[in-house]
Structures are given as C-alpha cells and as structure tokens.
Image (cartoon, rainbow, N blue to C red):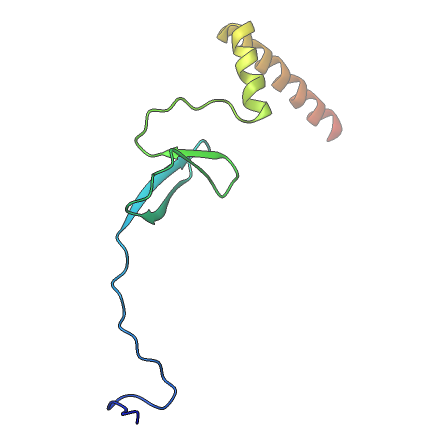
Length: 109
C-alpha cells in the first residue's frame, strides 16, 4: 500500500533536492578586450586560457601571461615593427593616407 503525502499525486516521484555543488567563477579577457566569466566546479583545475565568443584566445584576468600574436595581421605588424623605426612607419602611413584621400577626391569629381 502506498501512502501519499498532502501535496503529492499518484505517479509523482519523491526526491530530496541536493544542495548544488560548490562552484567557482573565473574571469577571462581576450585580446579584443572582451571580459567574461565562466562558472566551473570548485574542485576543477582552472584553465589559463579559454576561447572567447569572438574566437580569440582569452587569458584569466589578472594573470601576467604574455599574449602571442594570433592573427596574421598582428604577426605582420610585429614583423614591420622589427624592420622599421616608428618614424618610418608614421611616414609610410601618412603617405598612404594621402594617396587614399587623393583617390577618393578624384572619384568624387
């Protein structure tokens, strides 16, 4: 014979809710500046890196890990900085911007 409690109905399963497992919130920041948090089990090993929603590699906030250049653009910029002085790069940029402005002005005539 099954005896039902005051707030139960036939077929309802009785269970005791267990308290949630302890958790830890870990903050990450990607190279694009996105900050986000991941909730992990308190006993889990906390990864140093996590993949951001933009696809970039994110490092734990507050960690002092040197971020390597991941994209082709960043690698090219690093190579340029190694071959040219900041003054040369500024001059190249100014020349290219002047060329683009002249092309834009010529197309509007």
